[in-house]
Length: 467
Image 1 (tube, rainbow, N blue to C red):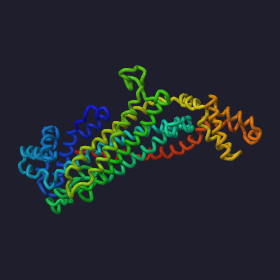
Image 2 (image 1 turned 90 degrees about the horizontal axis):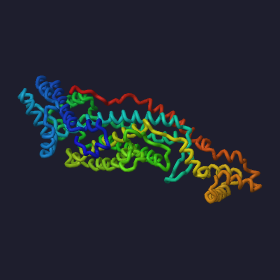
Image 3 (image 1 turned 180 degrees about the vertical axis):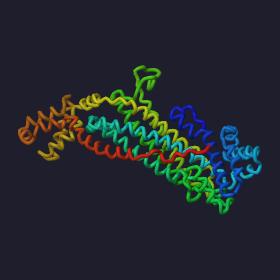
Image 4 (image 1 turned 135 degrees about the horizontal axis):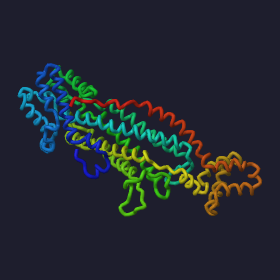
C-alpha cells in the first residue's frame, strides 16, 4: 500500500510491507491458486488447468498500479485482477483460462487476501509484544522497591514503588496479547461463498472445495460466509485499537516522568535521537510521541470499523470498502508504537535518586495520610485529620518538613506526647517504608505476570504458503 510520508514516520517498514499493494495482490492470487487446486482435487477441472493457473499466480507478473487504477473504475480490485489473471493463463492454456475464479466472487478474493495479510500483521504485533513485555518484566523486577511519587489528578499523592507502576503498564499488554490470539483464532477464516454466499455454482462440491482451500491456506473454515457478518473480524480490529490505547497510557506516563522538571525517566539518546532543530539542550521523548500518535488515531479507525458493520443484505455498498481502507491503519499505527516503545525501554534511563529528591522536595506532605491514620489510633480519626490539616498548612508556611512540624507539635502537647510513639511516627516519613506495600503487591503481581508471559508459545497462526 502507499502511505504518506507522515504515516511512514509513525509506523514500520515491516508493517507497510504486510499491507503493500503487491502483498495484497499476491494474497489474492494465492487464493485463486488454492481455489483452482481444490477444484482440481474435487474433479471439477483438470489437474493441468490448476497447474497452469498456479504457474502465473505471481504478483510480479502484473502491472499492479494499472490494476489498482482499473479497480477504481470497476468498483473492485478483484475484477481487473481476475481479468488479467485469466488473460495470462490463456497464453498457456485456454481451457484453464475458462475456469479461473470459478464459483467465487470478488469479495471472497479480497477478504481472504486481507485475512492472509492480517495473519502476518498479527505475527509482527505478537513478536513486538513479546519483546516489550520482556523489557517491562525486567524493569519491574529491578525496581520493585524503588520509591517513586504516585500522582493523582496530575498532583503528587503518595509514595509508591516504580516496580508497581511498571507492573501496571505490563498487565494490559499481556491481556492484549492473549485476546489478540483468541480473536485471531476466530477471525482468521476463509471467505468463500460465491455471489450471494451460497456456493451455488459449485453445487454439492462447494463445501469440500472450501475445506480444501482453507486447509491449503492454513485458515479456519468458516461455518458460513461472512460477507456482511463482520462481528468476529471487527472485534479483532477493536482489540488492536485497545492495544494502541494501552500503549498510549504507557507513553503518557513515560513522557510526563521524562519532563525536565521531573526527570525521573529518560529515553535513550545519541545519534540525533530526540534532538531539537533549535534547542541543543533538549532530549525529546520521541518514542512516547509515536505511541501517543497511535493512541490518538486508534479511536477514529475503530469507530469507522464499527460504523461499517451495517452492511446491506448480502453485499455491502460503501461500508465494506470503507472497512478495507481503515483496516491497515490500525495495524500500521500499533506496530509503530510497539517498535518505538521497545526502543525506549531497551535503553530507558531510570533515575532513582531524582525520584527520591522529588519526594523529599514535597516537605513530607505525601506522608500526611499515613501519619493521620497512625494518629487516629491514639486520638480518633476526626481529631487526627484536623491536626494533620493544620500541620500541613504550617509546613507549607514555614518551609520545614512535615515530620519535624508534627514532632514539635506532639512534644508541645503533653496529652499527645503521652499517647504517640514519636520514633514510630517518624518512621512513616521514610520513603522506603512508604513504598513497602507497593513492593509487596508488585512482587505478587509480577509472579503472576511472569507466569502469564511464560505461558505464551510461538505465534500459532503463521503459515508458509507455496507461493
